Length: 89
Image 1 (cartoon, rainbow, N blue to C red):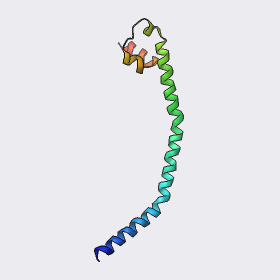
Image 2: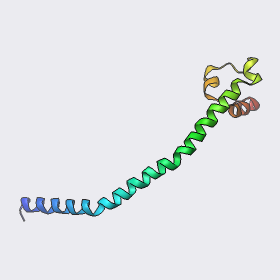
Image 3: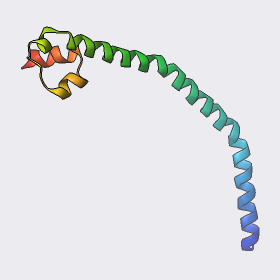
Image 4: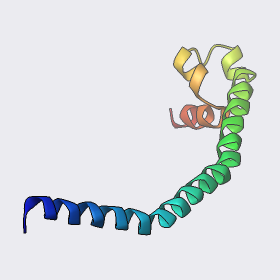
């Protein structure tokens, strides 16, 4: 067998397998899009919960009286996280 014949056989094999596997790839892509759509409400709820918890922490007495002063803490923590951290200390 010459190298040219081997190349043609390999190209034919690659083309046939791509054609056979294309429907599976399309189904997998559609399923990935569905997973993203299903995760959107969960991610939105987590984002909203974090924003609300952070706002509630800023309204708390611990922030107003100066118990919590750390800028990173004020920016990234929620009321639940702050309460747990202060309770542990």
